[in-house]
Amino acid sequence: MKNYFKVGVNFDLDLLDKIIELNNSENDKIIELYGSTASHSELAARPTFRLPDICERDFEIYVRKAKDNGINFNYTLNSMLPYGSKIELANNLQEVIDFIKYLESIGVYRVTVANPILLEVIRNYVKSDIEIEISTCAHIDTVTQIKYYHEKYGVNKICNNLNKNRDFNFLKSAAKYCNENNIILELMANEFCGVGGNGYATHCVYRDSCYLCHATNETYEDSIALNNYPMNLCTMARNSEKSNWLKMRWIRPEDVAIYNNIGINHFKITGRTGSSEYILKTMKAYMDHKFDGNLIELWKPLESIKPGTKESEIKQFYIDNNKLNGFINFWLGGHCCDNEICGETCKYCNEFMKYVEDQNV
Image 1 (cartoon, rainbow, N blue to C red):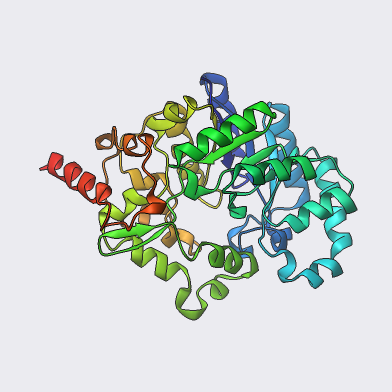
Image 2 (cartoon, rainbow, N blue to C red):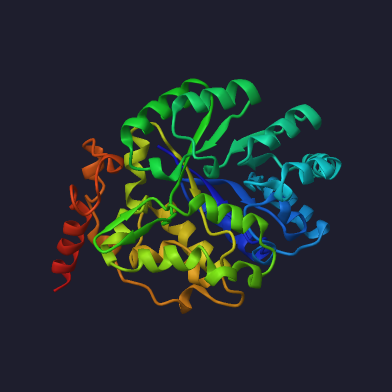
């Protein structure tokens, strides 16, 4: 089965050239690029300082060049709280309407929305038929939610709830409904978000709070207020033990075929605020269905958010990706982490990490 990827970009034209080149030589295809710019950061899930500050002309050139080479652009309007409050959104409603009309006029194919309030704006105020994707930030966790978004707002693409990436019973049902109704079900492949402690880890309890902080921060100084909440908490917790990294809901490049077998062939590659080198390396790993190296390098480390910090400068655990063959089979058999006390009633990841380490001796 051919796979289709959506890749986050930093608006580097050289990177776009390499993406186009990859599409000319690979069986799988990059069919969508996503991102947002600093000029409208109030509508995005990233703080102003982490977004590319490019002018309209350069943005339009980028979108046009991608489109001319068969790659659609998806603009992320994925703030959990646009403009910080409902009344501020109302006060700036005309600006939002004008911006969405502008995106359509320059060839933006799709927008990603996290807060349903923007669905109301797009369909009832802009009266636009632009394609819409529901962000992973919306945490869809039932098939009926997908049905509602599709029928009420004409949504035809869903970025899956990260926490559901290993829930194969849910994924099979969601894929069946989506495939029968011409909806794209997309999984986020290289996201390692979570928290943990001594011997256990779980889906990040700070995730929504993190989205809200990011969406409303503007400067790096804003982001590190209150002892760098919440980054200091999730980073420290995840790094407390190597096995905690196995408990996050990532998808290995080698395991993409497993998801193909249940009818899913659309994947999101995260890291749009990363360097072009990092984005290209990660993208190529998933298109090759193979990565020789440290599993954790497929994710842009949180510690590299500081301006001027490169991903390669961050010291991380080393987990040999080639030693993880068969790891996902535990979940294919029906295991559901949501029903366990990690590290107590289930110790699978701890034991698998020990198995990996023993191979390295």
